[in-house]
Image (cartoon, rainbow, N blue to C red; front, side):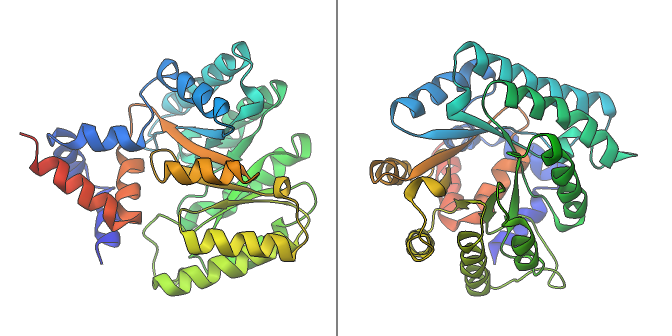
Length: 308
């Protein structure tokens, strides 16, 4: 299977240099990354709002090695909040953050990440929006959930992400599916060992359905992160069975993937949010998008072969 190989490559400096220099890379990166700066991403938020869509914005970058870099990541999000405030786009755009960007892997990383993310969550709340904490590899999750719990004491709308390929996630979903919670369910896009995660796609999908049912039957707000037509249809049916109105859960899809489906779901009355990444440190995010779907890798390969 190519997925694990690509995920391993996402950690390789040699592959980073090779991919970055490949002549077809920019064409494919531009498909998944909305731009490098706030100025480039704001028109995309405005266009999405005009189409009845919402967005969640992710400033890409995970290779944080110093506290100063973590503070710079915090400041990048604060700049984003300020731009959304000026343009009155807060209600249409939330933010997704990876705690690794805020220093989680550094010395005293848990406390550092919490200290850096709190002002972003506070600023987001002040303009009528919120923040969702993205899930990363399984070794970071206890810290992420603890930070999520701490932030929710003052900002109960703070969301978090759970991943269906991890064995632990059904228990996490039961704990999180409480009144006022916001939980995004995704399949998972990190290379995880068989001791903690399903390796077979069919088992991951089955777990996704079980977890979606737990969230739909709970008291929180489920956010269905998937491009899979079958899982989307199942989520809609589970929503109906649970007596949920269309605005009592939402779908989320990545910028640049199945854009027509974004519009279709919104036209049906669903809340549809587009996960929109931007920034200069795109490599890790880009490689996970290639690993998630073979068609993305084929598209990349064709782009390299037709450039030069």
